[in-house]
Image (cartoon, rainbow, N blue to C red; front, side, top):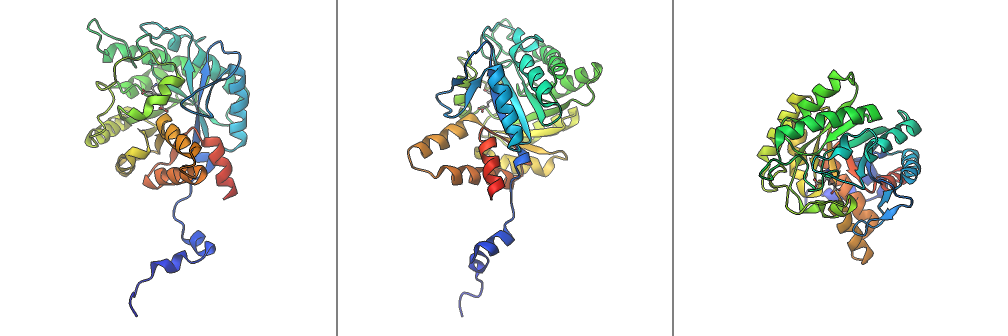
Length: 325
Ligand code: PBG
């Protein structure tokens, strides 16, 4: 009677498969990252991210409303300024594009969704690094922290519910928490980019924010070869007061997501980044991959690995599919 064990029995019918399905992503676990471009009068397409645009303040408001109606759980904002300088003044300026957009969305949506903002200098500096440079051109950790503190208060004041410090500076979570508390923003939370890798998958994002970067971020973002330091960074961020911890990118780091989920006592997020988006869109456009199935498979995998929250440029579309399923 070989074989004695027949796992296929549980795959015989759709009803049986539904019964034993272990992992389901819910729309409210998805977060939509959005770009807003200062002074834009029309949305601008991002060539390497087909379907994603740099929004005007107005088109962002409409798109955010649609995202909330589609049931996504949150929105992560990135600003694209028209002018940049050495210290990223546009990031701390209450009238900088990101802070204005936060104010718009908070006024429009109130507490209907969770508003998140990128807390980093790379979009605002003329050298494209995530921090302030010292005389030798190296990113000065502690000088950068002082600017992050100021930026945090500006973003909280503008209406962000969660701040996403993404610069990988040492001590950034502690400094942001302290600044928020001192300014009375006790309920503004921190989505810590705990394990962020120096990844080639950020390529299209550089186009999306018109990055001025010429070198790389190897002195502050993590080496893709390492997992131990991801756990160390996560532990530090938890100690410093992170409300959620995040791994980024997602698909190439499922083992890191799993390992972080095992040690974190807060929700775990993962960021399906621009290059992950571009890769699948390009293959699907060529007819080489089934677009919908591939996207849903990646989201399921990221969730199965241990992510409770997933940032993805497909959030709205995927939320629609998940509701149908
Ligand atoms: C830094 C930041 C980056 C991304 C999110 N926050 C770029 C970088 O670290 O180089 C990448 C997101 C993506 O690729 O989708 N502000």
